[in-house]
Image (cartoon, rainbow, N blue to C red; front, side, top):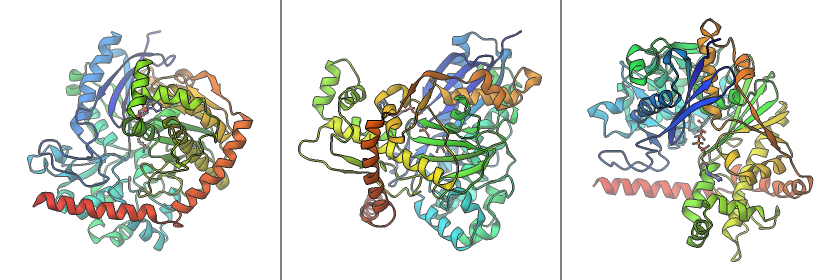
Length: 565
Ligand SMILES: Nc1ncnc2c1ncn2[C@@H]1O[C@H](COP(=O)(O)OP(=O)(O)O)[C@@H](O)[C@H]1O
Ligand SMILES: O=C(CO)[C@@H](O)[C@@H](O)COP(=O)(O)O
């Protein structure tokens, strides 16, 4: 039988990568990473250098095309595979990463008139400057008893589509008016490949309040937010919403020639990056929870049961695995917290020692931290360096470390940060189980499980659960490729559904992280203190984090105004 291949393209926070996969056994033939030339723009716009406000995070759509133009030809060249054997392309993306486009699908930031306008660029998932809009969405939806809010644990996030688009309308109405539509970047890139703009039910379901039964929130609700938003869903989100596994279209001749692929290759509906990891690790059954562990941590639970759990970012039918309910919860900073510590807090003696031992700073800190017993450092941290996504859903919360003394060492703080993120995960699992959905099995994918064994052991000890780790180094891209094979369908040598693709293409490693009862007991005790701090700072008992942020925002507004003078 002729060999067939699928291409998975993973658009992450800092870079995009293409992976070419053998659809018969999931073997990865070639992969290539392209860092985004503009990176994450969180301080200034490119070109003019115009300053951005606090909590902004933008991207440039040119960078996504750069990934396609560099990484796709690179994997084709490395593998030497004939383009006709690549039967499908799947892409996964961070979300809600959204942009305004004109009626020809051109991003507004490409137009000279908008080049110096921050609101014309892509707002990255971690753009957190629309909290005011998110708060008003929550208040209004609650007051009106809008049923859609219960699907999202009773609270929506500033990261999502409506809050971000409303921020554009509030602060740059001319950009809002000029936008023919707002698109998820996933859908925009799929539109570039397939030549027709379709929307992903996965992105729309988790990030734009869309559901299969009810569509988007109605005009009356949108009008109650702001009369100018009344037709937001009808006009600015218009476009067909397709379920995962569907074919969005076929690769256009123009891009096929540029990328070295065959015109007409099936292009799958886009999927959120973390969600692609679920298929990639082969979790297609009820009760399986997958943790996509990288910059952030997304928890995806597959279930045959539909319940509403407070503070869980969404339950969407067919949202992750067609035919089942998909729950998403998450922590918006995990690897980012450890990265912050290494970059900004590790003293020179630590970087020096790591260098002299010929290892990275993370590895040095991990080795030292692994010599400590749970609780030995006397520290406890709240993992909110980038706000809290679940279960408090509040981007305005911030990080905290309790217990510091003059004796505290860098590796102790590093370990406390690893532990804090594990406590955050335990809180999410407990919230889901208390609400009535069972978490039977824990699997992990993403960059962190391979990089930091201590972290994984701490997660097993803190949650009291065995953790299985994905075999693939690129699980999200693998998952995207699996959807590419499904989009091609059996008629073109692909698969009829994602479960069939998973049977052939997904794998976990033979090695598991098993919880230790003795360490678990200490962590049970520390977790009780974590919950105390969590509720005190997160549920209104102590408003210091909010007050600090208010002062910071006022000062930054004054600074921006002074800069303009
Ligand atoms: N050895 C390590 N231990 C813990 N965190 C790490 C280590 N090496 C890198 N990181 C963090 O992992 C994150 C990158 O994870 P990765 O899965 O590669 O990226 P992404 O989430 O963007 O796909 C960064 O935030 C980085 O700070
Ligand atoms: O928000 C989601 C998923 O809902 C992610 O796209 C976002 O956390 C980014 O994930 P990464 O850690 O960059 O892979």
